[in-house]
Length: 354
Image 1 (spheres, rainbow, N blue to C red):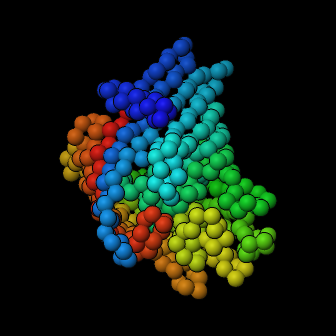
Image 2 (cartoon, rainbow, N blue to C red):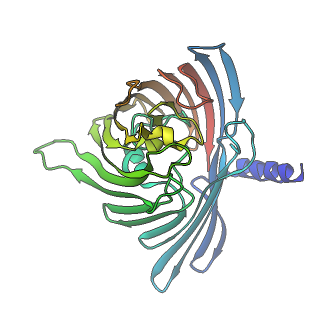
Image 3 (cartoon, rainbow, N blue to C red):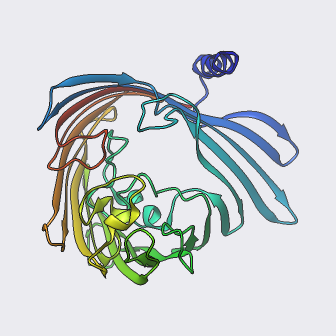
């Protein structure tokens, strides 16, 4: 109870502040300590294909982060730690959960943070309100492995090289990702720019059942892009690969089952291939009102011919520069997570960023 009171007082202090985009708590010479995050209240009306309709309201997505920056011998050093209040998401608890904890020195980042698949896809996707379905249809669609406990990034201009904690416990090597981000603009007079990221990835994948340590090397590739079109933008991505189920979020033998890693990537001792794509459109109607529509689909080459498609549409209204209200409709063909069933959902939300 005492810890909960501390958290409540901290959140109340944040709400009382009017300065957005992080609050500088301490500045000592070239060292700065800042507080940031957001408070999000959401209500979800769920109408699953199998089961009764229900309503769920919470503020668990709300998060707090601390950032420290300083310069030592002309080198920029940054530390970042962030938590939200999902705790054990499967049980619906509201305990503080560690999301990020990393240090960054010039071009190198080490710690718990986004994996290489996320950086290869998510920055080019449309804006979504669904905390658990941001990237389904892409190779960065799995919320359970999207922030490994240990990740090393080297980023230089458009190049990013990543080594991350392997999902397979008995892997001989870390999971690896190499990506390159760039812009294509030389199409002629008045031709809009295209932002893109291409990535390749490899990982040691278990091909055996429980107690069998056989494995194989899974390889995948991804391409994501964004085309600006006047007041809007078109967003698209495609990926394919063997043994990529733990990152795409769709298992070979059925929807994601936490703790059953083998079923995501292999069947009858062989790696399972899958292909997915997503396409979306973002439009800015006014300086305060924007909207997004998105469609994603994944097809798994397994005995059951598992497929998944996800559709969504939203409107987001910026009531104040740091306060958004939004509504989103979504429909998924399969149960992707035990707490996100197949069927329709409507989410309404209010969000304050600081």
